[in-house]
Image (cartoon, rainbow, N blue to C red; front, side):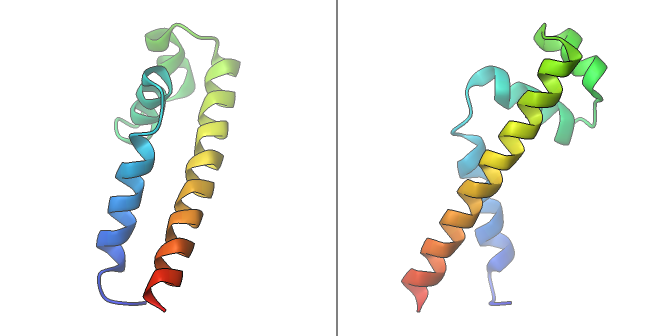
Length: 79
């Protein structure tokens, strides 16, 4: 991998997180930064456990797609 790829990956992740609406950012942050489970998150964000599961799944997929597109653009620009 090219030098600086970790820094690029972090930059893209932070940029993609900034795109999330407040409630979704909170749920994803509680899951991945605080290590909370769906039942705990559902109480904090006032959603059902199923809604939290869907929200996190959907956000992870959209973040993944965003990161892939950013990396593709970066690789294209650097070639």
